[in-house]
Length: 263
Image 1 (spheres, helix red, strand yellow):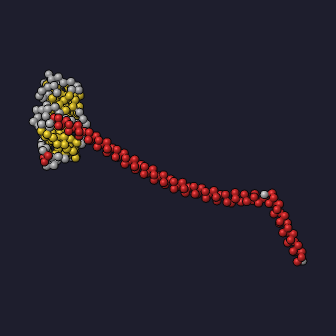
Image 2 (tube, helix red, strand yellow; image 1 turned 180 degrees about the vertical axis):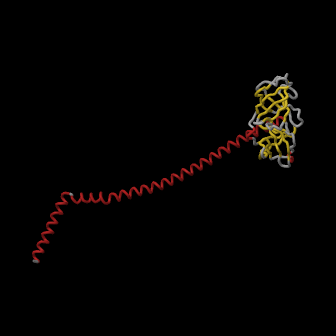
Image 3 (cartoon, rainbow, N blue to C red; image 1 turned 90 degrees about the vertical axis):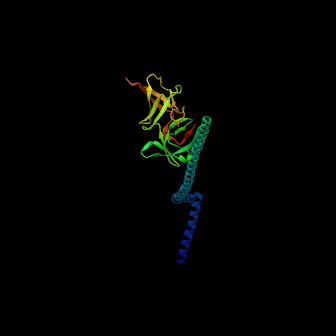
């Protein structure tokens, strides 16, 4: 019985060896290995590859996002610096022209900055110069080489109050350049308009005529620019006519002004 079992075992081993060589010769083991790789290991390898790619993509995204944020910050800073530089250049150019004009006219003057407005009245501005700098009530305030914007109406030691020409409470004696003396009285109107009143009917005034200060007010020299005639209004049966005046500048963003103290 034992010899029979040994014989069967030997026969089984021999059969296994024969089948091994047969399968090896036909590439069965390669096929099986490929099948196992495709069905078992390939998905795992693909998942690992995709996971690694996603991780590195996330790192690259964070890096690019940080670089993009830094570039935006740098660009914003450069834009601010550029605006500041342009502002300084424009201010420097303005001051040079203003000083040249004032020296040519030989005016006694002081430059002042607008530091605020009177509450509830945007027609009155507050300046950072006052009585200690020689400012006094009635002095003209100008900009842009002789364009008058208003008069000083109150002062303290280190600040003063400027009433714009567009204030309904303000008045200014004005004229045409070719006429000596006063041609009319300028008053402010609601809506930042100017009205030239008390113009004699026989006085020729045309649209686009230049209007200047008359020089009859003690502290205001003749020839400061007020604006231009925009419209003539004849009043029937009246000895005077009036004209709408267009201001020479925009009064809304005044910053650096010149106060003429003497002439």
